[in-house]
Image 1 (tube, one colour):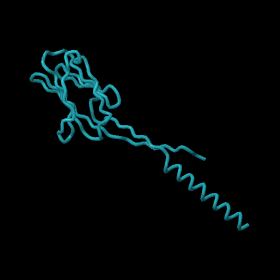
Image 2 (tube, one colour; image 1 turned 30 degrees about the vertical axis):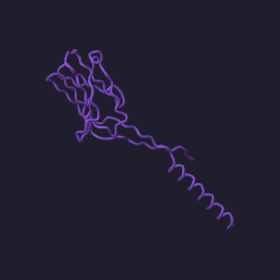
Image 3 (tube, one colour; image 1 turned 90 degrees about the horizontal axis):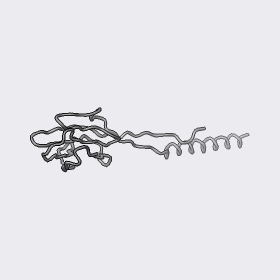
Image 4 (cartoon, helix red, strand yellow; image 1 turned 90 degrees about the vertical axis):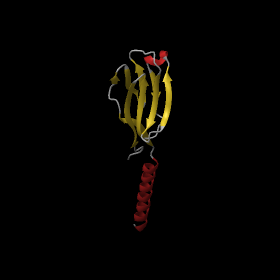
Length: 135
């Protein structure tokens, strides 16, 4: 009788250890997304900045201009992470991928001539965990 009690406790302990181990090593996934950015589209003068996918923004000039169009990406510490120009052929739209940026707040700045348009957004990673095995 005592042997059965000990065996049952050992089995229960091993089962609990296995379940705890499964939960501890269960894969987790992290999805970064823009939490504060253009909901649909930001239009000012002839410039459009809109989110076209997960962490991707499209910058386009609605009415092409002859001036040089400068696009820059700035973080919340005012460090310029990107600085480039849109060629006239790219003024219809160029997609910028922010999937490599760390969590934080950023600003897309588009300027041409005397005009300047900016759109701020924040990137936040959300982690979700799943259970693989259940009894």
